[in-house]
Image 1 (cartoon, helix red, strand yellow):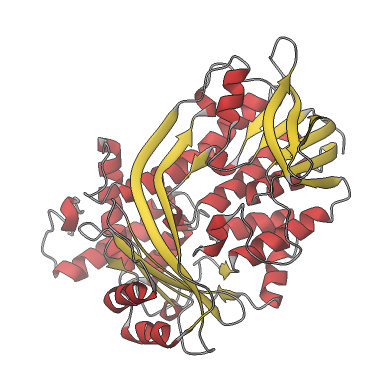
Image 2 (image 1 turned 90 degrees about the vertical axis):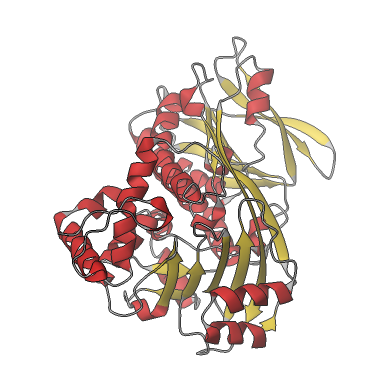
Length: 464
């Protein structure tokens, strides 16, 4: 420890902030996490994480990074009784992407492992592990009101905070400040106050709106680990049900492109009746509600391009949703925060010189892959406005036959899920062994007849 300085300050005890603190503890003598909430002592929802009351899933890459940062993490989750899909059996997974329903029988040895703790349990477990690190302290109940800098304003020297209870201001000096305060981050304002430009913002408006409710369903009633119906062209609606710990299930139903979402439990049941298997809809109807219906809206995917700024003060990093907030239906937010923590560790291992720009560029490479995936998926819906460059149309066209093959081939479906889970690059779908299976699936689907255009206007490869 202490290779890079005495003190690092992390703004926000979000997942991104907690994971950044975990990494920084190996390189700084002291790490302080500043959080506006008073953090709960139990795994319950808190005001600063409204999405904690909503449906979410952990992508496979997130669990992989958590196991790396906290050895034994997934084993502890399993011991707590969280639900999981770890045998590659597609009878236990019922997913539909873009109107393509994944194969429902057979197994894939390469399919990713999925663990599904509820958001409060996941965040509490990570928070307790970070609290146990000797040189990490938490300053709760504090608002961040500004940054301090060197006289020439080329370097950040700390952060100004206000104690919410005492209404008392103070300054925390720091060698490094990391902003993990989420989509509402004020770093663009703070930079402007110091004479810098605000970062450019890339945005794709999706007008997502959804309703969720936590239910209790007796063990064994639901056979699947997760049921998910993602939006499809001409149907900007979605439905999902996922099992958590203690026989609890989160149900979510929503819309994109400004379509009115379900208002109450009865309308969620209506979505289930239309989009879910009959037995699942019946189980939800008979379930015991644990919470009221909760609503949430996300206007857009938004990426603040700190990596494109000509000037940035040294000693300031921005992570998580404070950089890029995605359409949450793809589950990428916490995973990108975890990947950024791993990227931060790599940067620090290479030395502290020029850390701000090095990290911004490296983080952008990881964000770009998730951004392209989310935006390309959103823009397959004709109801979502936005430019559709030729590169995106080509990639979507190439993906269409892969998704068609995933309807019948568990090997292709397993590889597709590894890409969705951010374990593998989409280039892995172009391996000869996968392409051969895709062509065979196309041949079976068309009885050998050439296919020139698929549903939704996507070009599909010709079967020979």
